[in-house]
Every structure is written in structure tokens, then in C-alpha cells.
Length: 434
Image 1: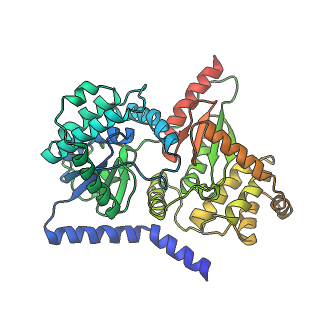
Image 2 (image 1 turned 180 degrees about the vertical axis):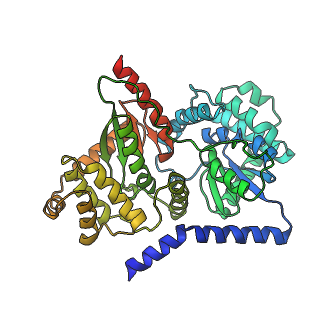
């Protein structure tokens, strides 16, 4: 009965019916109050992703029939960003690559700004916020910050540290009241959209509401980016993709079938580097973060045409048992299929991997016999390899799943970076043909 209820609750929670109901309620409340559709934007002055996202604000406010309200916020707390220093350094190079992809500004050689210049940027933005000139100021202040132009920041009107702290406290409170923890975020009537990566979902929603003033057929401001699966350059040997994933990661679930497709298309060797879920490695995952990730994954799954939403959380025994079987399936040439089916079972099919019935069902469909599966469950050697994979992930500068890299190039984090991995693969094939 508990398993049945879990399936009903999770499929309902992630379903389009409840999403549409939430949207209807928010729209109804807005209409009876006579309010204009309002998108809230939460900006962290020294966050690279916020600087990239801020470069869309002018176009958004011009094109869509909305009010756009900015807020200043602080960085997420440690529970929401458990490997803060790794995140800060990764964000520098990732934001630069995202900016190039979308045609925005972020320097390739950016470094973490000193506290004094970060404070100067925040004080200038809080002054602009109070004067109603935030949209005219946010991009230029960000450029000054990330290009290290302290003189340009010093020349701008600025509030005191105390006044800026008050503005950030107000922004943090509003973000918390709406139900989030990150910066570079857009919020609109019950739903969150992270930076330029998720702006396509927000734009699509605004377009469906008839709030787009552009001519029909006009490209979106930040269209969805995905792998193209184009021509395959010749190579004398196969590039190697390292793929870190977790059986408890929703984003890993929707990345696995696409990773297999990408690797096969470009004739790459796919090295499966399984890791324990973050919570099983002692890293906290707050409830507010789990809720956002679950709903965001649903949108991304729909965008990719993948099943998702009937969930039986595999944390604990489910993930451990799946890792034990996967460890044996890989040398048998059945690891890729088992990993994909196992994550689909937990996040789309509502199958309990902690049960013999559920795990044997997945293993059988992946081509493993019951004897092979039970032998794998009796073998604890997977722990050592999971730890080795975790150490390799940390050595790459990352910490979470899914992450991946090709031929030792800089690693990427997140199922929304397949376009970047594809570019790296093409480059690697050219290098292997030289």
C-alpha cells in the first residue's frame, strides 16, 4: 500500500494536471487583483551565472508584456551549495562557455573577485535598485566586476554596506517566501527558471499566455540548446567519455539515455563512473532543493521526450543494491543498459530497487540472469570503485551527478551541457585523427 501511494503521490506531484492547476490559480488571483503579470529576478552581484542571466533582462522586459521586478540576494547557504569553493571555480569557466553559446559577455580568464570589488559592485547595484535604474546598470556593473575594473565601479553612485545588506536581506526573504535558494533565478507565478539555461521554459509559458509582443516565428531570446548529432569527423581511435552518475540523481536519470545515444553516434568509448548519492556521502540535500530539482527535471524530461515522474526514491538500499549489480554488469557489456533501465525504474516506472522483485526485473531486462544478479548482490567490492570514482570526480573539479568529460578535457556538470560535450567530442575526434 505504501509503494502504491508513493507512486500516486509522485506522479500527481510531477504531473501536468497539477502544474496547470497551479498556473490557473496564480493567474486567477492576479486577474481578480488587477495586477500585471510579474516576473521576479533574483541577482547575486558576484555570481557568474547572474551576470549572464542579467544580459537578457532588457530584451525580456521589452519583448514580453510583463512587469520585471529585480531583487538582490546573497549566495545560497552551505546546505544548498555543499561544495562551495568547487562551485565558485567551476562557475567561472562554465559561465564563460554558456555566455559564448548565447552571445553574451563573460571573460574566459575571469578570476574570483576580491571582497572589496564585490562589495563595490553590490553597493552600486543596491543604489540602482533604490533609484529604479537597475536594468540600466546591472550589465555594466557586472562587466566592471568580472573584468576587474575597480575604477569603473568606484565612479558609480553607491549605497553604504549597511544599506546594501538591508536590500539583500529583503531579496533573500522574498526568495525564501517564494521557495528557492539559488541566484540568477527567474520566478513567475509559482515556478522557477534558472538563468539562461531554463529561460526557454519561461519564454514558452509567456508565449502560450499571449504575452509575446514579437512577430510570430521570432526566435526566443534564449532558445533551448541541445546536442545536434551532426557529421562524425574521422578519427584513428575512439575518444573516451567519462560519465559520473548516481542512481538517486533525477538529472542522471534523464541524462543516461542521451549519453548512450551521443556516445554511439560519435563512436566513443563510454566509461561508466558510478558514485554514491550525495546524501549517502554525507552531503545534505534540503527539501526545498529536492522539490525544485524534481519539478525542473520533469520539464527537462518533457523537453527531451523522456519518461519521468512516477518515483520510488532509491536512496539507501535501492541505490546500493543497484550499484552492486551495475559493478558486475559493466564487464559483461550490460552496464550501460542496466544503468539506464535502473534509473528509469526509480524515476519513471515507480519500481522499488530495494526489493528483489524490482531489482530482478530491471536486471532481467538488461540481460542479466537471476544467478548473476544474486552473485553481484553478495559482492561488496563495488564500494571501492565508487570511492575511486568519487575521488576522480573531485580531482576533475566537480562533485555532483551527472558530470562528464571527454579525453581528459575540462569536465561538465549537468544534463543541460550535452551541447558542450558534443563540441568537445568533435574536437577530440579531430585531435585523434591528426
